Amino acid sequence: MRAMAFTAPGRPLVERELEDPRPAEGEVLLRVLTCGVCRTDLHLLDGEVEVPQPPRVLGHQIVGEVLEGGEPGARVGVPWLGWTDGTCRWCRAGRENLCPSARFTGRDRDGGFAQLAVADARFCFPIPDGYPDLQAAPLLCAGLIGYRTLRLAGDSERVGIYGFGAAAHIVCQVARHEGRRVFAFTRAGDETTQAFARELGAEWAGGAGEAPPEPLDAALIFAPAGELVPAALRATDRGGTVVCGGIHMSEIPAFPYELLWDERTLRSVANLTRRDGEEFLALAPRIPIRTEVTAYPLDRANEALDDLRHGRFRGAAVVVP
Image (cartoon, rainbow, N blue to C red):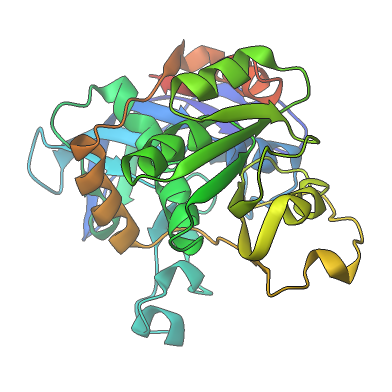
């Protein structure tokens, strides 16, 4: 099969012809239909998140057709969380996203920047009817992590979103469906993305360094920029919550305790659970969530990653093997 392989941090992916994978017991073999491109892939590529045993096929928002090990022809989605031991204290408590032995798609297991992929059948989700392959891919990480981030913000009415990329353009629609008010923060001067946010229901959009027109009840940070943490705390009302939704963030600068005072909460999101996936993929078609995507053929995966790095598209990028 053809694949785009990660070989070492700081190097572009390399197109290779690899042996077709074979599923073990409890696994499914998939023909990859599409695979979303995630900022986590950039963190892996840049060495900010370790890839334990390269070479490795990246990509963890897989929409695939079952070839072996399940119902032939069924369309399923494979997320970042690819395997857990099921026996540790975290798994037994329903917090499998914190499993110390967890294995992740496109990091510990080969992912979807390839023509074929193998996945643990327990960690595959049926794709909702009505979503074409391209539009379904971003639901599997951008959507799932955005959903979990919003849930950890509680019942907040005024929600600020810092970094209006793939996750934000989905969670904005969820928040509006739930009757929340959305305030979007983008790179300074990025009027195109600010207009996109307003198009999706944000009532205000401005630069990340600006103050919103009124205090926030919660702030969701998807941009991997540590300096946004004190900015978000500053914009958040007393008793509010700031949730960091990424797997990696640059160093958070020191900030005065008064920004955290008044019972503000600062917390992170780690991975996802299967329950998140089941809940979100049941909700998505009821809203319905619309994903905006830019498609790239497999051999242009490096271009997709570079365009993501520099914010050259709206919504999400998707690789089509």
